[in-house]
Amino acid sequence: VTRLPETRDIETLVTRVRAGDRKALAGAITLVESTRASDREVAERLLTRLLPHTGGARRIGISGAPGAGKSTYIEALGAHLTGAGKRVAVLAVDPSSLRSGGSILGDKTRMTVLARNPGAFIRPTPAGDTAGGVGRRTRETVLLAEAAGFDVVVVETVGVGQSETAVSGMVDLFVLLVAPGSGDDLQGIKRGAMELADLVIVTKADGDLAPAANRAAADYRAALSLLRPRYPDMPVRIVKVSALEGVGIAESWSALAETAEKLQAGGHLARLREAQLRGWFWSEVQAALAEALASDPAMAAEAEALERAVSAGQSLPGPAADALIRAFRRVDGVNHPP
Ligand SMILES: Nc1nc2c(ncn2[C@@H]2O[C@H](COP(=O)(O)OP(=O)(O)O)[C@@H](O)[C@H]2O)c(=O)[nH]1
Ligand SMILES: [Mg+2]
Image 1 (spheres, protein in one colour):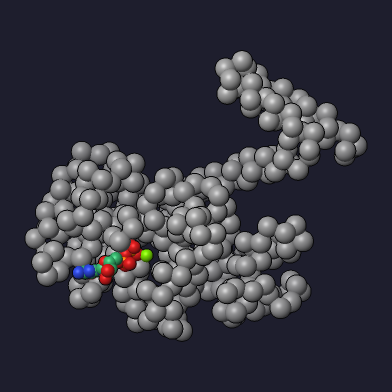
Image 2: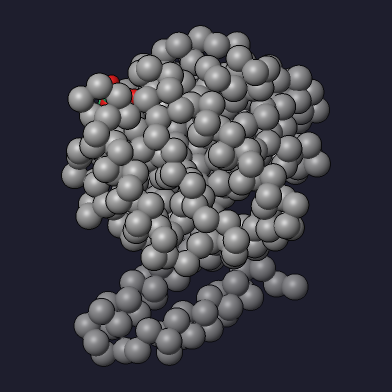
């Protein structure tokens, strides 16, 4: 259970989060996730104050089908990184919590060892209502973890719907995890997810599954060679790991670190983060407009009427949107005279 912070005093919160106080960080995340207007206002002031202290982490997105081995891999990677003195934050987004309405406990309980590690912070994030469950506030949570001094921030998501696209839009490197001998051998994986990947990890490369893991790695190598790489001269690497046996974990991190260094040297990373911030801004503009429309009953009714006309084929979406914006400007002009 996550609680709101004990204090609303911004400077106290800033000091505590920056000191890496886990309770303060957890409270700050709860604050950021809160939909209450009064919480939102405090959250935005806190984030604004922390902004100069963000950006320092390596941001890694990890996606894969349910059961692909994400949690087990992250636990092993976390042990490897904390063992090397790095602090690791894991934000686990699971769209299945959309159904239950709560946040997932499965992932948290599976990362039991990492959860007790003082160098690690695990936060299951309740799924948002957008983009396959990736919350609107996940980006802000990444910033909070960075302000708290984490060196690596992992965003874990189940690969369904638009979640891969959403996560790849907020991380430096996107990792696709695939299990051998499962339905997600190539056919099951959407081409879209493969196009986003900076690294493909074939999990469970041990015991009876070892031959299947070899085949999966070869299949992915062949498939990836047919795709245009995300960055020129940067072929996507494929690493086989066994999180159970601890094999390939260090190699997978080396591959990520090397890719990140190359991207940084080529200026790709700076450009990527700039583009992500622009995208974030416009998605907030859209969300804020949608909220402003919904919060005015007359506008909400107008929007619904226009939507009905569009879905019935009576109006074109373009002119209907123009009509809605014109109506909104009139209402807004009345409510907020200059
Ligand atoms: N043989 C083997 N099984 C694994 C490995 N990693 C995960 N698993 C198993 O695969 C199942 C799903 O793993 P989990 O990490 O929960 O997958 P997630 O749903 O992607 O988070 C579990 O039963 C794990 O024990 C591995 O490296 N080797
Ligand atoms: Mg999991």
